[in-house]
Image (cartoon, rainbow, N blue to C red; front, side):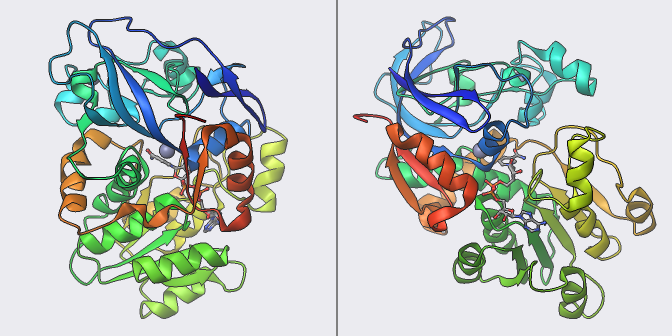
Length: 387
Ligand SMILES: NC(=O)c1ccc[n+]([C@@H]2O[C@H](COP(=O)([O-])OP(=O)(O)OC[C@H]3O[C@@H](n4cnc5c(N)ncnc54)[C@H](O)[C@@H]3O)[C@@H](O)[C@H]2O)c1
Ligand SMILES: [Zn+2]
Ligand SMILES: [Zn+2]
């Protein structure tokens, strides 16, 4: 089959690789009908995530049709259309039982690596380095999905792939980011980063009752999408003093909640130098701004991915202002039934975010334009079949 494989920094190729096979009785093989490139894939593309190997198959956002099931799979049959959440979950451990799905204890066969780094492990993730289990990803014609009975969600009849594929990660991630803000009616939520995660965080904040959302970025087309699609007031951080503007817009108090949908994004010079000298492995200028801007007693919610140590972290401000900090991988399974229902009820059409449609064979081009934000690229979906 054809699959998008990582070969090194800024080097992805569409290779011919062996078809996946059922290894355990709980496995399903999914024939991928649509897959996306995610902001998280850029961390791999940019060589920022350790434990990648040449030939690793990328992709953790995909939907498709069941092509084969192991003898232990009871909930799904060949031909069912399914959503595949990006974390792989056993359904039986303490974390899965408590709906902390992305922290599943049993699905990362390389848990020792993460334990060495962080003292504990999270769930395995499709196509996201050996640190997260070394699972083959969904930017491919077929994928092996372990724990199929736990992991998959059926696609209701008549709902197109383009809407459902966004429920594998970015919509639930934006939703969790907003959910973590404990929004009260009348709240103002500011979101750093108007990429897919930030845009869904704004949409979700409104769904959860926020009165105002403010989007911060530097790309005009992203700011425009935030304004038009998410009713956001927008700030271009290259043109205005964000901290000052946020104060002005909120009567001097600051937003009730601040969401970091950037992660290891574009950094300040100081941070880049430290990164170059390997004095710290993350860059967090946006995060520092969030903590500074948030109103006293508010919430700082961080869906953006961080992966190492962060210094100049204003712990004193976090304490003095009594802020709540919430972060982590998304517990996709927890939100899926509700979000599928919102789409079915036409309360949201998540496909608003898709700007580019291409064949899987165009993936190298897709990664380039998504990284460089060329051609007003916000979200790319790729069709593996017939590519
Ligand atoms: N927690 C999770 O489970 C989870 C899931 C998916 C994605 N993510 C992470 O969420 C983040 C966003 O993902 P995405 O797909 O939207 O990525 P993206 O790269 O498309 O968007 C990031 C946006 O942030 C903007 N940005 C950069 N620096 C900024 C700054 N200082 N202030 C304001 N905006 C700034 C960029 O211009 C860009 O538009 C990434 O770090 C990604 O890894 C986390
Ligand atoms: Zn993703
Ligand atoms: Zn589990």
